[in-house]
Image (cartoon, rainbow, N blue to C red; front, side, top):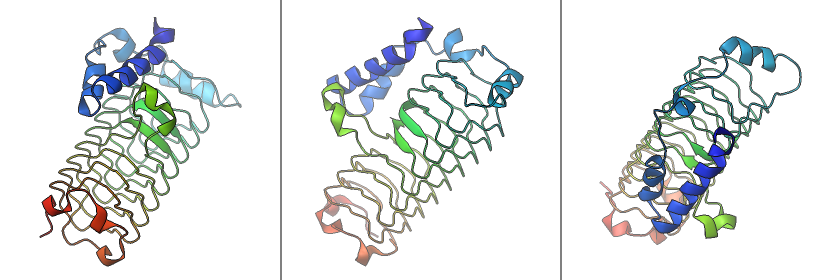
Length: 266
């Protein structure tokens, strides 16, 4: 069962997205698994064993491995395949995951503060409640569940958080940042087309040249955000705080945002 779990659970997530697009898809998926089972709570390796594999030479294959709860801080996972790994409540502070494959990873309530994930792939990743404060996700591909995650001060320069339009028959895959903390994050040049970030805390965030087309931003707080060159075309800004925006006169298509008349402007 463990070997097939990530694919099975990803299909559950996608199927739920078809039936009930929106918040329900993530909630329905969580309801389909037993998060208290050994698969989601125990580790099959020690930190020392993981470190030994990383030091062996070629990047090891750690896909499907159960690494729940381990302290893996400071280790170098560059270009390592962690597809479908279980890393719930793991401590990964200051670790390096540049170019790593983290697709379908389970990392609920994990701590990635100060970690480097430049160019990493996080497709269908389950990172709800994760701490990514100060992490560097520049040019990373992010299409997973980061609801309630802490990305304060994180770097997402040139990151791709947009919807994967190729798989719409299986459900809309995109970054979900509902109620996440992105205060002070740098999203310069990020592709956030159709990204969902309802009620996200985004005070002081840098959205320069970011693509926010069709993004779902209802209830988000963008107070003091830099929006120079950002594209707001058809972004839903219902009850969004668009207060004291820096570079507002240089933003693109803000007048074409959905429900702009219902946004909070002062």
